[in-house]
Length: 266
Image (cartoon, rainbow, N blue to C red; front, side, top):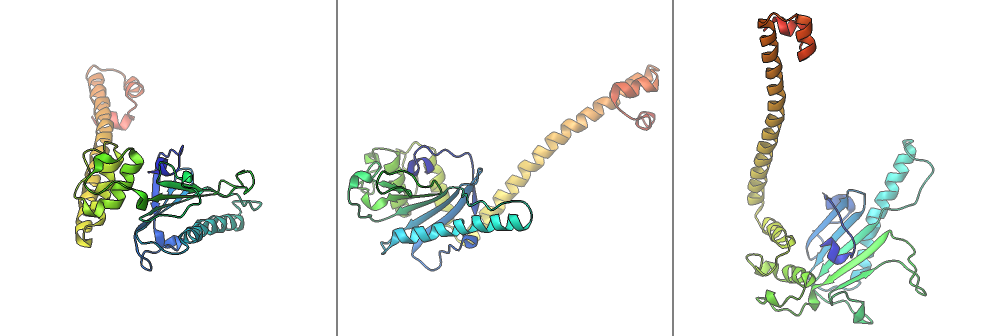
C-alpha cells in the first residue's frame, strides 16, 4: 500500500500507535477507520478512510498533519529540558498523511492522477516546483474514480486498481478475489474480517493468538535452553569419563570448564 501511494517508498516495518494520543478520534466523524503508525527510522504515517464527501477535506488532512508536528516539537523541547539535546533543532521527520476516499477530488487537470486514481502533494514552489521541505506528504486514493463494477475483479488493470477495488467493495465481499495475486490482499481481507468481529470475538481471537505466541516463545526458549542444557550435560559426561580414567582434576577443569566443586559432585 505504501509503495502505491508513495512511489519509491520501501519500509521494513511499521509500528501501529494508538490514535488517541494524536488527537485523532473516530467517534466524531463518519469514517471506517484511522491508523497512525511509525517506521523504524521515525517517519510517521496517518492513514484515513472517508466514505462520504465533505467540504474542506484537504484542509482537514492538513489539520491532522499538525498533530505529529506538535508531538515532534514537544519531544525536542522535553529533550532539551532533560539535557538530551542542545540547541533547539526544528528539523522534522517526514509525516505522510494518506487517505482512501470514496469520492472524487476536483482537480484542474486529471493528469495529476497516477493510474487515474492516486493524487499526491508536497509543499513546493508555485513557480518552479522546487521542494521546500520533505516534512509533509499528502496522498489520496480516490476510490470514487474506480470504474470497475462489483463482481468483475478481473477488469482491474493493475495493483492500484485492485487495491481500490478491495477497499471500495470489501464490505460486500466474503473473500479475497482469486485474481488478486499480490500477497497484500489476503492480509488486507484478514484484517477486515478481524475488524468486523464483535468485541467478544476479537477478544477470543486475541486470546488464541496470545496463547499461540506464548507457545512459540516457550518452544524457542526450550530449544535454546535445551542446547545450553545439552552442552552442560556433555561437559559433565566428559568430566565423568576423565575422572574414571584417573585424569588430574585440574586438567579436567581446564578441559570442561567445570569448577572443582562440580567435578567432585559427579
